[in-house]
Image (cartoon, rainbow, N blue to C red; front, side, top):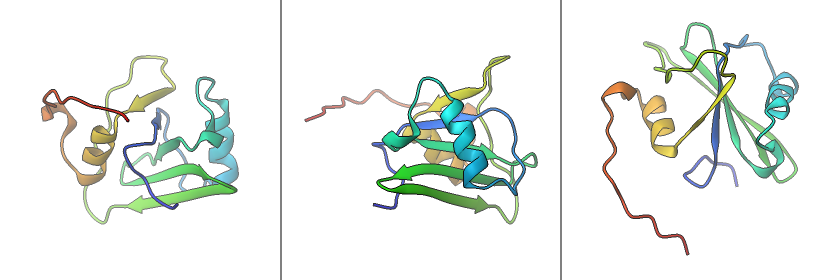
Length: 117
């Protein structure tokens, strides 16, 4: 249904976007990412230059859903990119921290056993 959770793959676009960009522009950028398929339900994150707004694009059964979040104060902290890297993949935990305003450089994850049934 409508929602973002730990079952999705998250991809962060390294360039900033114009906030006027809509589903057509963002889906074109997502399709250009060669190692993922937007129609599988992956989530694609796009940030504004000021880093106070994010747009999240994802496919849901029969069409794209576009989520948007704009902060009234403060900015989102983005992970560091390697030079020339256009996309990076994010873990669910990092995505949650970014959306919650938790500094990524101080975050340390403890080992947890993950069992998939």
